[in-house]
Figure 1 (tube, helix red, strand yellow):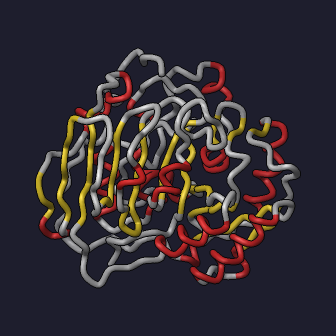
Figure 2 (cartoon, one colour):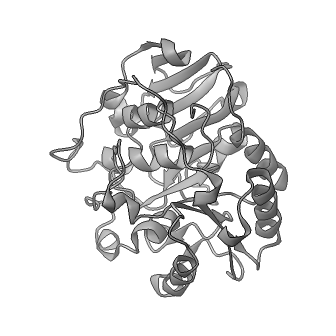
Figure 3 (cartoon, helix red, strand yellow):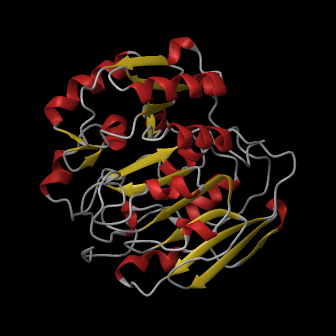
Length: 337
């Protein structure tokens, strides 16, 4: 993880407060989600069928593609026809896309989710450690024409059928009453990866949602049994096996290659899903520690508590998403009403 030239948000970025007055948002629904299945991967076909049935995804929203051998990375030239094939199948009512596979997860230095949603960004690959292009989705409270043109996207990992089944089950949870939950924000001994600490929401209780915000100075959270949000900065996060993540939990760590899902140089963001989280995020190439390239803690919390789905809350929390891959269940929305 190299140091970025600047740690501050871009001028004019929206100042975010938790202010959760008023009714919860209407989260993204199954009829607005397209499901993309790789027919060359048996687990993609199996998990796609499970998800379609569990969420009642309309048959017209299913897109079949073929990606032989499931490479970790596609070239821009390989990706261009695949992207066009997917986009050509999306009706005007589709707002989001779930690609049902673990790999490929990168297109050049871009993540596959950003390359699908925003198009391949060659300029970012010319300077991976440089600034990224702003996303029209960042910190948005209301839909805009620019947002309407975007088809935000996420990956549903398929490496393990039991993991995928468990992920789908917890992503479908809806609460009649909010559970007592914790949102944990850790400032670690790794200063380069703790640059988000100044963006953490203030500690205290969000009484209307039965959620307590806790800011800790520690390298790992241990034995917490009520985790709804966990954000930290480490190359590897320890003690995940001691935690209980609530259905719908979001968790991520700021590090260089968390989005290298099948790599082992640093902790893969897949470890969060294996530990019980429902969605996560990580970068697929060296981003430097620009906070804009990672989920903004207060924006993510505000949007999720306001009723957004996991895919909406995560996309709205990343200002420069070109290098970041979103993974998990996009329709998870425990605070939707």
